[in-house]
Image (cartoon, rainbow over all chains, first blue to last red):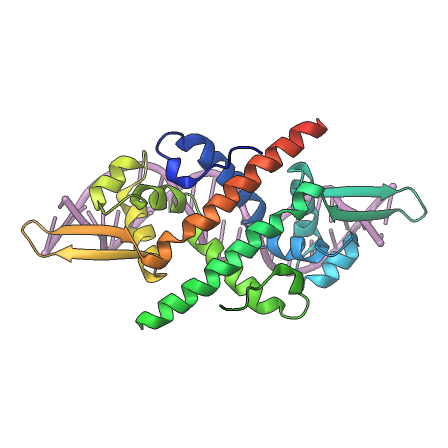
Length: 120
Length: 120
DNA sequence: CCGGATCCGACAGGATACTG
DNA sequence: CAGTATCCTGTCGGATCCGG
């Protein structure tokens, strides 16, 4: 079992933490990242499937985001050289684990919303 | 003890999850949010202290970000009406808990980086 | 000391049309 | 079907100066 880092040690090694947090943030930030991840969360999806799942996304944006997520190693792209071509996207093994982060964010979001309402 | 939501139920109740995730993302996204939270993580800080902690941030940006973080209930602002005025910022109780999210992000960032290196 | 006001550039993202 | 290409808009953040 490996050492588990905690933010409480940030004083001794800040740069590495920030880097890792920013890596994660990069995967999740932007208007379309979350919807896209949500769309492929439960299995392979084709380009047009994802586009149908996400109202108002343009093919340009979808293409751009998919490309970057693939480059980041979050998404895997599989081409089947049939006619016509069939392309499928799915989360990488590592990408699937991002749900753990998302769960924590949901948890914090809920408790924070509640805490804020208390005050007002 | 309250029900703990999981992303695996997203199909049955997607909107609430997305809202909470976006709330959390809103607190962490942008160029300066993370440095600012890091700066006040270990106690009250004054405006100029934070500014000194974060190289290259302009007063305009710091002011803007502090204001939004306060509005979000993440930061608490305290004014001491001395002369000259003394203003202190600190994380709210709820804000402190964001470290749990950050820890998860560090964890995912580390494992993901390792996973990506394996492949290449 | 703690900001506010103003002006400006860069880049994320939108709209629409087109292609192998 | 799975994207490109082109053009355009708006928001984020930078720079500088000002004020209580």
